[in-house]
Image 1 (cartoon, helix red, strand yellow):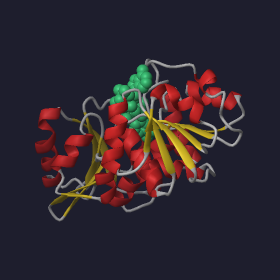
Image 2 (cartoon, protein in one colour):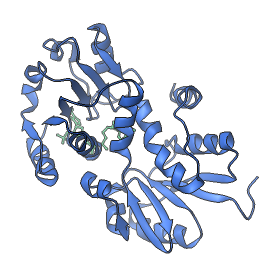
Image 3 (cartoon, helix red, strand yellow):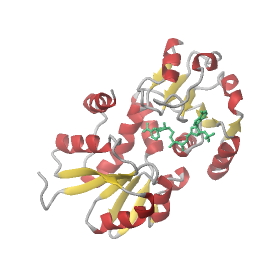
Image 4 (cartoon, helix red, strand yellow):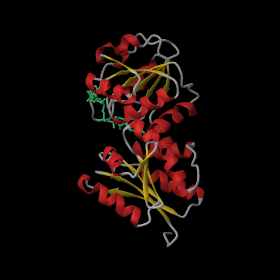
Length: 276
Ligand SMILES: NC(=O)c1ccc[n+]([C@@H]2O[C@H](COP(=O)([O-])OP(=O)(O)OC[C@H]3O[C@@H](n4cnc5c(N)ncnc54)[C@H](OP(=O)(O)O)[C@@H]3O)[C@@H](O)[C@H]2O)c1
């Protein structure tokens, strides 16, 4: 029951109806016995900043920020964590002592998901994509000591990302399959393979992969993407993107509600069910 002591948080997006975050956070509130509520906050881009400040003024603990507000959130925050600066985006905000503090948990969520699957994060990683999510992933891999190669359809975008991060190597989009020998990790951080989006011939692309390659996709609709299916057929280790979605949410829940929620089977089931 919501009362005067209920801790409030939510997700700002436009549109926001598709977001699974309310389901996940409210489930965790229930599991941990937290007097908390997490609501979808449908926010037009032109009203993002006043809406954000208003939520802080109204006593919200914090918010998640999703498409299309992740870059606008960077400008609106009073303080940014180093991780948010590296990622060039904010997805998790805490209101503290009148300040708006922005963090980006996508990179940590990505790495925590791999670690939870027993994947060692080291060696050479090939990342496909140079959009918002790719930058958070690349920054996290570089910060954990990986050598990172980036292939993006639009080369200039990959080069801009590398120059912002000060590290990494860009290669032509059509060359990436030939670089698979010697890579320990392949990450799809493009929207290829997502329901209703364009796709490619992953079977052909993976022909040169070594037997120890781990293949992961940050797209999670469908849960087993065409890339993951092709990798599984080749006997490679695969990790799907649903765990990233769950792990990236944990830091916000900890900050707002005071508990470290676990990415347990029940949480996976809940989200997987809602995506079916
Ligand atoms: N698992 C999670 O928790 C999580 C978190 C965040 C995002 N995601 C998913 O990650 C994906 C990317 O998100 P984003 O925010 O980074 O999107 P974004 O900023 O729009 O970037 C899209 C990326 O996909 C590439 N791309 C699009 N169509 C392509 C095509 N036909 N061929 C080759 N490359 C193509 C783009 O290349 P160009 O630069 O050439 O256009 C760009 O690199 C989405 O599916 C999103 O749902 C998952």
